Image (tube, rainbow, N blue to C red):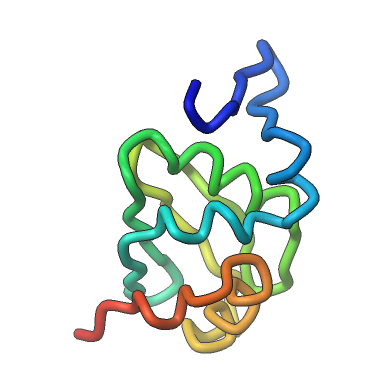
Length: 106
């Protein structure tokens, strides 16, 4: 409720107009970390924010990202074959500025 995100039955989530217009820039502060293993990435978020962030990613298509699955505070990223985590981070940076600063290195 505080984020003004609503769930629309059978359609997904709806962001407030100001967040939709900003392409998720206001939401990027909710990202705690991002980590990759092979063709999979994992974004940890503040509690309750993962569905909204995944919605933004799903509606801002990028070539390296095939899709997302969101829980309450975690987003699973599925990368297309042939794309590296670095290329994916470049694409994600266009949607969520500063995400490169939250990468967990192995």
